[in-house]
Structures are given as structure tokens and as C-alpha cells.
Image (tube, rainbow, N blue to C red):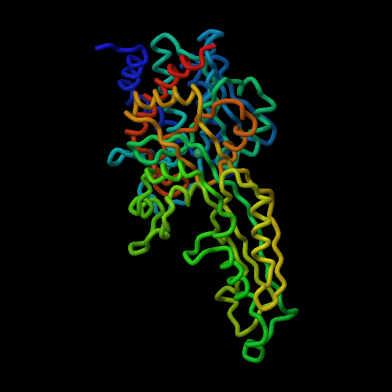
Length: 462
Ligand SMILES: [Zn+2]
């Protein structure tokens, strides 16, 4: 049997799996919640702990990066693979989403493993993600050093939308300097099929308002000849959707080849039912001959996120003066907010129901989507690394949400290969109760990283 050096390193990483899990558990006991001021010290304490551990691991220049009015990042590097070897930047985040204790079956900050899954806030999003690199780096270090140069950059503000990450990029350009980037905070379609994320949807929010009267009017006296703004509002929202309730305005063309492949993504009814907590008896919206992956990743979607419709305690028999709704519109990857807004305005402002006054205003600035074509030798290297670790190439997947750091990396480093992977799967419930990571996925992710460094070193040798 011929054994390659990377296979030997992968075997030793696998032998050290239990200690990788233990280290992960220790980090998960820090309630490093970046949106709550009372936990800022936990974020900083964890940053210091990570810096110390990276130093003990043999990384150089291990440091906590700080900026005014920002929670820290941690950076470290190992650049001894030589000038001909590529430098791989690994990005992850160590901050956590907050926890609403309701519905948790165990302490969110005390990891507990049940049926092969580790339950804790941050287990998969994203501590397990970037720590799968920590374990792979450790195994290579113990074998004498890595085949490529490595920079590790972990952020402490991802869960609040990375508001200062671009300032960190400007202030510490060396910490981000690389030939290829591995951004580890994404999902796999299942625990046996690895995912490579290649698109994100953008986000546009608008406020839709209907006005009709200067003062509330008696609905018995005037009803029948005077418009009800609440009904007008509902009718206008309905204009944006089809009979299934799915957003109809702003749909985009998707390449046939992509659509064909999207049927292979395992997003069947049981997966959607469990992942989205559908009630028994409620089915996903009919696919109408379009793959669910396309509806969730490549087409726009509409959600009503707030309204001023009369609340039960405000009930009275009156026609109201105005009604408004905040509409959250997920933009198709590559679709501009301007394009969507034009189409939404055209649908909402023509022939308003009952002649009510209609206004539509954008709220805040829109988030960019991201559409990426993974091609070239770096992605051939990814395929080989996953074949050796997972037994198959990764499937290209999209993200229905918007991840600000991905759009930022996509904009700042558009000329570099950006490899987006992670340890989440459809049962992870990131940001929700009982967040968990499949330990089998963690194990394969560590092996994939071991092989990936070696394959990238060969593919991008200068
Ligand atoms: Zn995350």
C-alpha cells in the first residue's frame, strides 16, 4: 500500500480527534456573544486564549488585533514553507449568537454530545469550522511543518455583521495577505455530502405605506365607499407574489445547466420540514418544476417583517388613516438592489387599490449578494482534497441569506480563489436553539483541511 505524506498526517490528525474535540469544548464554554455588551469581556478573554494556544501550537506572530470601538480579531501565521509555496489564509469567527434559553435541551455554553452531535451555541457556527483547521495545522506541525504557508484570521464580530472587518483589513493588511483564501463558516447539504458555497443572496428592505384618511372614520357609516388602508396594504403585498405566496417580482434567469444540477441537492420535503420546523401537515411551497435549491438560493424571496396593522388591543370599528409594512426582500445573487427596487415600485405604484396614496421607501443600505464561479487549479485541488477525505467532490451550494464578510472578501479579494466551506449541516440550527455539529462532519473537515493544504501547495506552487 502506498501512503502519501498527507495521508500519514491525516491519520495522525484522526488519532488526535478526541483532543481536538476537548479543545473545542473548552472554547465553547466562553459565552463570547458579540451583540451583548455584558459579554464583551468574554469575547476578549477568548481572543487572548486563542492567541496563547496558537502560539503554543508553533504559529508565529500570534496576536490579538484591536481597533477602537471594535471587538478584536486574532491573527497568526506560519510562513516557513518557502517563497515558492502559496500562502493560504484561513478565516473563521469565534464570536457567538445570543441564546434564548427557551427550547434548549442542555446548557448552550456547556457542550453535550448526544447521538454523535455536539450541542452548544457556536459548535458549528463557527467554532467547529475554524477549529477543524486548528486540528489540521497541529497535525502538520507535529509532522515537521506545513506544505504551504498559512495565515489564520479569526474575527470576533461576525455575528453582528462584521461592521469593522474592512477597517481591520485596512489597518492590518499583512494579516490578510494571501494567494488563496479558505473562508470556513458555511454549510454542507448533508452529513455525507460536502458543500462548496458559491452564492449568497443580497438583502433590500423597503417600507410600504398606504394612506387614505385624515382621521379615523366610522366603518359602519362609510364602509363600502371609503377605502380600508389595511386591505389596500394586503392587496399591494399580494401583487408582489404568485398564488403560492412566493415572490413573483424580480425573478431572474438561471442557467439550464445549473438548474439541472440543482435537482441533486438533497433538499427534499423531510429535510425542509425538519430544518425549517414546519408543522405536521404543512408542506413546503410546491416547487412548480423548479428545484428547491433554486428557490432558496438563486431567486428573490419576500418576507413581511413588520406592519402597523391594528393590533388586538387597538380593535375598534373604524377605517384607519394609514397602514404600513416593512418588506424584507432577498435579492437573487448578482441582482442589484436598484433593479429590484425599480420592479417593486412599478408593481406597487400603478393603479393603487381604492385610490389610496402609496409610498415606498428603501430602509438603510442594501446588502450585496455574491455569485461566484469556482474554477481553476485551486478548485481542482479542493476536489482532490474532498475526494480523499469525504470520498466525493463537494457539491456547489448557495446561501439564501446574506453574509456580510463574504461579500466583503468577494469585493476586496476578487482576484483570489475564495474557498467557502464549513461544518454546518441541515440539522445544525445555527442561531436557533440546540445548535449542534455532527462529529463525523468535524472529523471529515479536519481530514479535508489536512489534504487541502497539501493539494493547494502543489496546485499553486510558484
Ligand atoms: Zn458564522
